[in-house]
Length: 158
Image (cartoon, rainbow, N blue to C red):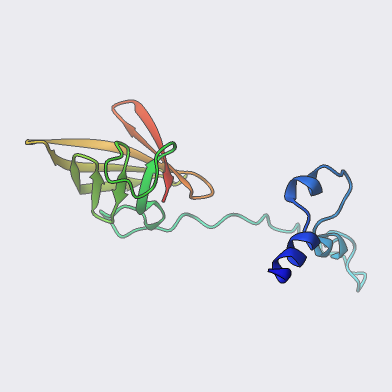
């Protein structure tokens, strides 16, 4: 118990650090040299430094939902793992498992910005239909927005 108290006492709460303007919480970031300053050897490059681009989203094989979008999802206010949750969704490479229906992927078209249009054949509650859903993953990968017939629903990753 004593080590826990010592660790807690030595680490101020995150809110306390943010309340003090000018306080450096990551000393390493502040001590690194300015990389845009003149080089140490005195030679200035003629060419501009290329801009660093973020890597493109992980591509999935043709006809499959992108790997980054796969997983278990729940509504923002729902508890993960609640099988009775209305917004529960499991995204597999070739299936969308909703609360009361299953969609078997027929075709996936991925945009350059990472959005995916998923055409799937659905079955549920004694009916079957085909629909194209638009899936968009948040930049941090923690939220998935599914647009179905113009209605968008955002779910959190479980």
